[in-house]
Length: 450
Image 1 (cartoon, one colour):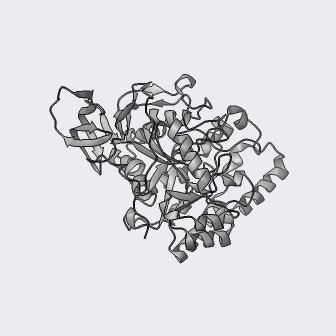
Image 2: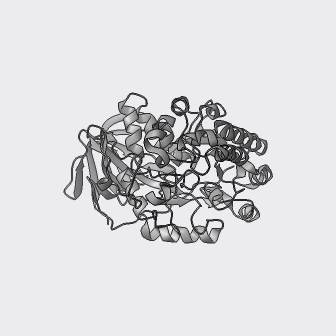
Image 3: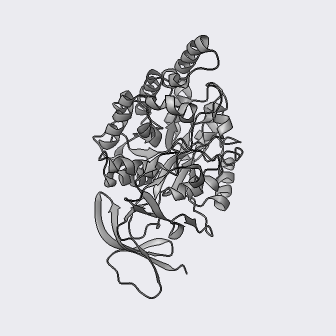
């Protein structure tokens, strides 16, 4: 039997409230919440002057395993996630091979069961080539299907550019359909314009003009129209523009929404002003855009048009990043610092702790129908994070845990620190030290969608 752990005298942030109390962990679960006396067999963790939140659930990461493990893998990136308070993640299908069938999905789960320190789930990839196979699958038991990242494999893999394929999927798929929403034809036209002027070495500051607001908005608008036609369960990944936020609802509860969206932390943190300083290190697809877009995304997050926060964690080696514009890989590592970034916004008075927990813990669990996760509730898995809201530290290379060994946040000083991370009741991370003798669990899915 596992040792009982008692987290004493901490400020619990959960379900819209903050209150001081104790949490008892036993057999991997939250046993009791309240005020408890210490018993001889308890391992006590002092939560005085700290805040206890549910473990962060990151609904979009690229951990590169299998096939691209020179950049990151399910062990290294889950370890970085744990240090950042992320206890569960959903990984995207653009590995080698692409995860395009149930067999490869099962193989990936098997790899994760041996390597991942955090709880894990995976999207099944979908494109024009495997659409019939996906439709024939029992999609109701999947976390979701996605085309994200598959455009790196070959042109034309984005559903947003294939309305017939998208409509076929929307009419038949019973899970969340999570799409990368940009119109490739608009992007390609812009690429050709800038290539004619600059050749291969386009200044990266033009990235948000090449991957433009128009390209995002038109794709998202069309996808939403088709989803509504078929009452499909559509999720727009990594929203980047203020214009798109007005396409989403906030007048019904999340549980009733058929169309949802997310913002990735870097689109709240950076803007086009940062390209001069950081260049290709902050080249993402979709692109980081203007200050107006950044503020519009935060406003939509606060008023519930945007439902969850993700990282789109996408490690590449520095060699892969530091190339000319068209050759530089898009994406960057963020999972170790996403909670710190959001807590920095809290310190600045932009967002409450309760809203951060709602968007990073509660809502991903609700949206993806995760069994027993995302909340501090008795009987739920003890995925928990203790945070010190008054502890300054600076990001630099020797405290990065990413396999790629770099971060666009290097040199950033945060005012908050993650001190403890529990996964299924196991204290994996404690003030910088890891206990790696247990692995995370596969995320289980609740009842099917109606």
